[in-house]
Length: 96
Image (cartoon, rainbow, N blue to C red; front, side):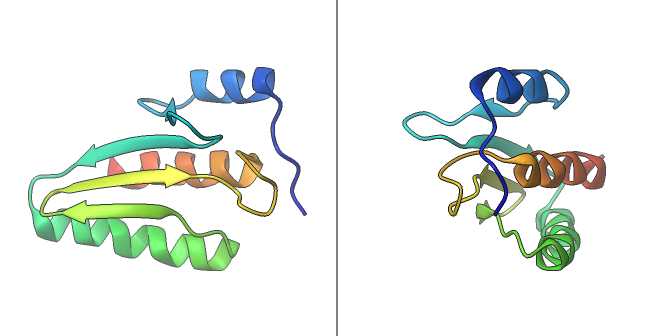
């Protein structure tokens, strides 16, 4: 099992992630991605889904038209782990 990040580790990781914040009321990180249209948002989700499946680490997300809201946490660890940071970085790279 992957270990949950300490608060200091999480804060350090967030400094290197653009636009990711700690989720209110739970040990998770979140970000809202906005795209030009539904096709761009869906293409992003498709690419991320393949990576997430390969990692066996799946995001919580919500899509409406060109907006994708993502929440990441490792449920088995009870909070944010290195897997979440890795997937967040991949999402940022994929969205740009």
